[in-house]
Length: 374
Image (spheres, rainbow, N blue to C red):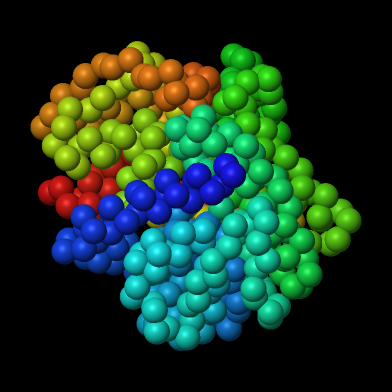
């Protein structure tokens, strides 16, 4: 019943969205976005993907959709010959998002709720990306059960699928949220740090589920020999943020795109790491080729540690509006992170050879330009 309500809600949002933007240029048709895709391909080593089969769960999400665009660009321009199966819950919205690939032999959508549906793919796969998850505060509070189950039951079912289909590498997209709260005993979160997390709260569902998803990966490595790598992603942003995304930075960007004041629903002293979407995509491609089995890797942007207040000020100044303060609703507040400082140490992946290319200022500028603000 919970998922049925979610489906109705998403269908309603996406039908309205599709009608509204039917005559508009989409962000993925923007020349800067296309240039960004080319840049990712140019500095990524994609030979390992040649002639391979990809399965991507959560295909319509911001991260996975840009990953798909990147691989498809390499298919069409460099003969990568990489087949992609994109698992989605809302087929109508996904067909609209990926309409450019409708007739491509390299891309196929698969409609499924990973918590319960059979994945109708009958061939072996080489790489599996588990990116399906509720990813913003309002959904954490409205659909807490689905939030937990997708990262646990759903992830387990995808791990089992990958194991049965002789998957060569499984990436579980985890989160900075697994570290919990910084208790003042460390400046930046390293991959071995375990912060405080009060599991007896509604908001803990997402963080605890991500932790359990990581533990499931370790279990499949030990028991079934599945190769798993875990990217732990900082607060992500970029063109393609869904309209319903209620994260603070997402709302700042939506406010800016509409020429509205930036609404800050706290004092803004939260100090977080952020990472631009193009950096995430390049890091995922890098980890497919270079990550070590069973290891977790922090992903964050260069010069991208900033307080919410400074971030709001920067965006407001960029678009010529102002920052206003507002008290969040009880439902909104229930989904907010309680962490006040969450800064990621990225030395581990940097020592392997990957480096971020986009600062928070460059990433925000690109995001707004791709979405239509000059």
